[in-house]
Image 1 (cartoon, rainbow, N blue to C red):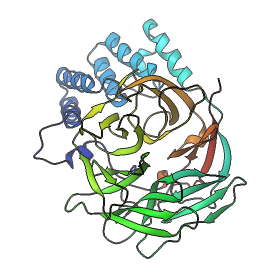
Image 2: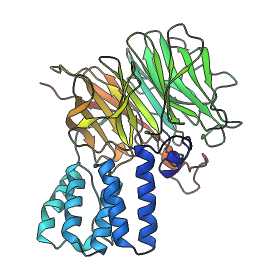
Image 3: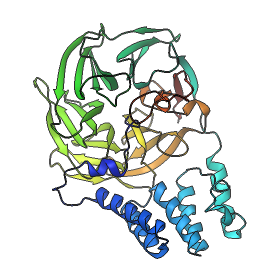
Length: 427
């Protein structure tokens, strides 16, 4: 998770200036040019730039809304209705009446189906149940794994990991050392727990210079067995999530720095698998059959990285708004013969938990099911984990209480994070 830092244009501009303009950089440039055109009341240019941006990422929620506003202002209500219909088809919500630029569309006969779809998208889906509450309100809780009969929950602001049993009793687990910083995403591999660690001025609860590392932890005792630091040099770098492949290789995504790192079995240091200008903020990952890595980029959606060739491609298939995806993890679903993954999304409206049915090679989304959405408990959603017959996610994770500088917001209400369980569908 990297909601404490701006991830739009600023993230793209942090990429190497010498590299050719990538798709994501082009997208942000077009969005910026559209914004400048809107300020200059040049609606034709704004419309053209936003249409070009959508050609790059057709399911971008923000661009669909912005283009509809421009079209209304340009006297093209039918076109605006069409783009809002596309937006609604993605399962998203929007307060049209509260949007001064779009409210004029509501009386139109051709907007009735859009209004109905948006209303339907706002109804509660799924039955998330509170399985446990964290010990106190206010801290940021980010990573989650399930181990035998308990959860392990990482805290960014408290720089630790908790062990939480089925009765909801939480106890400190990580035997932190003096260098321990904020703990982000985690992955369990038998007796070893792997965790992304980051600290620095903009990380809540941390102090000192910016630093990031992969932690190797004894999953039984909480002892830190090894620390594998990564130095971004003059460029900002922050590891945010972790996944373990079937051969024991550990992959870590740099949510700041737009890179994927790898620790091979027996290696003494991380090596770079990918640095790219096609992703603004890589988050959760899943290892797919055939040597591929599925990566959720907060800025642009799902990507597939071929670990043999290094080829990075957008995942195609069923249209889905996958920007704003934070967590991504594989699940075992009864009767499924192809990969199934769960995504936690906190960067779209509503925050939701999705189940994605993928093609065998993870190149395409075959089907999207919403496991949970439109529940108050899902506010400030962070990461999740697979469990037998269900999934668990962290709601009210605490990021909403902090600003982009990593400091607590004076007027923020301290929330108590919860572990929520959501049943998986049965045959």
